[in-house]
Image (cartoon, rainbow, N blue to C red; front, side, top):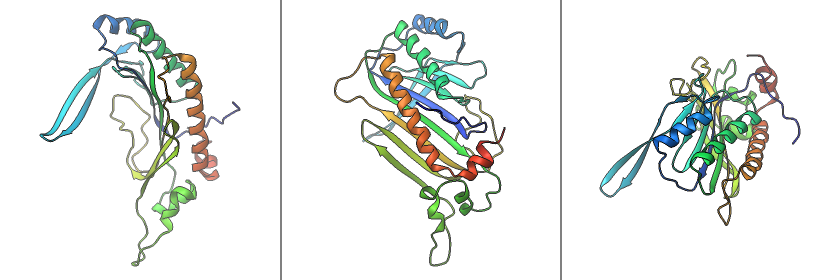
Length: 263
């Protein structure tokens, strides 16, 4: 697959893998205990995750709250959640694709040993990048760090000679079955809450450029079985596609002055 540069100072704040599968009954206490035993070496802490679903109806807004078993690492920087319809792996300390793939493999293996799901419905990998750089004096400063396709709007002017102070955008690459959804824009503060359940290195609050890459693969035609060999190949394809797109969105100045700088 070729060598990919691993930067010592990456902008990744959160990485999420969501493997949706066919629906299953809620896990029993005994099944949750069995999962905890299988995952104990890497994810020894059981900390349930709450999911709130909001539905709009003619009668108004209704909320449905569900609690799912979630297992966390001792450093509170990675977790695995088992929903009735998905396996979710999250980490705020992404190191490399192979390490994330191994966490997903462990999660799939444990699920299929304890309470197997019948088939794959969707695989998604989301990379939330908070690009932070020195000396952002105005929105137009981002042109030094982020490439023109995303920042060229900063060069527009109104009749009053006002320039854009903030912008957000979304682009979809690929097809319904596979591709990447890119969300981007200039913001202030944090995209990933430092006070959330997952601990993260917390830089000082301030301006950042969001590069949010959501890669996906959806099976076409028949629903394939939840088989690791099939998952692994699509996981690697999605991860490499995200890397290649990210490399097109940043400048050499950003690589040289920020990404390659030691923490």
